[in-house]
Image 1 (cartoon, helix red, strand yellow):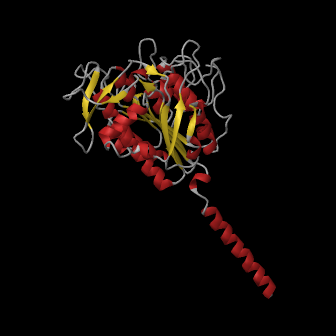
Image 2 (image 1 turned 45 degrees about the horizontal axis):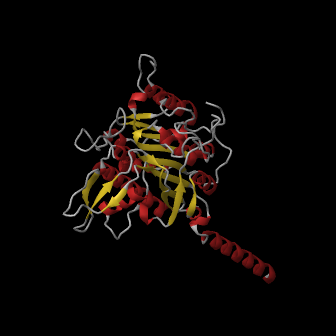
Image 3 (image 1 turned 180 degrees about the vertical axis):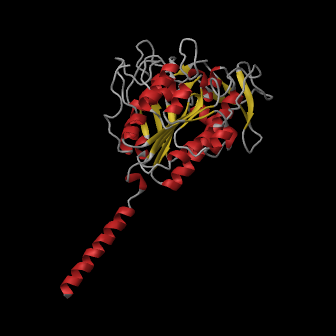
Length: 400
């Protein structure tokens, strides 16, 4: 009897120790239940530096700069005549792990649809979402939930959202692509409601809802107006990116199987194209606040992979000192104040388009350590899929 009792005690001790061993495994080694990918469209190193300067000053890290793992990402597309990517090809590389041509979303260079991380997460039983200050059917979100060789076919992309990928949360602008026209008489917002979406058009409705399948379209086109400073420019989204991010995380995180969420701030790129540094920085601050919301959730949650990256660099931006005596020189924008100091800086674009320079990435959570280093943007997909234990072959495989 004593021997049996001792054996039983030993067995119990082994079980306790095994349980302690499992619980003591660091979160980063246990896999990611959730993945949040935050994209600053057009956000290269200089954009990050400028956002840091106006947010926290010269010697502190912004929220997105504080994430522990740092990478440098190549963004070149599959174009044969030049390497500089657009948002469609760059987002497709991150979403699906394949290089494609500029203007193509969710398809490879043979126009074959390729599975996206959003579709793979959905197939694995997770809930998924898209949040953007652009049109919800613009290039970056489209690359995660649609397959077509023309990013401008936004109504077709909206139809694919409803017919194929069915993101659980869709928040942003672009109402015009869902509304009926003479050529396309069907109201896609009504069709979405028939499929179980709660349709929202303002902040009050978004704040009030607790429904778990949302289509929020808060502007006819983008949620801002990109123009040179003083020429009709505006960055006053009807619902801010941080508000949409908080709501999306709050709803998606209720699912016990986890979630995938894409968050995009488009205006960093759009304002860069028109040389509007003031509103580029305002949009950058909104992105940084959204990163804080996601980081706070990831800190508390422990099993969330959070990635912050630009899809490409915009405008060959540099951060420079003001002209002697203060002020901006010809072609420069500013001066802008450095937070917490009397210092100032100006911004200088070398082009109105995109560039092929690598962009910085910061990350935290399970699998984030793999993103330290230098690599192509296709590697981001690999890390997301493997960290979350998703089926690499899941999702759509049809040609669009």
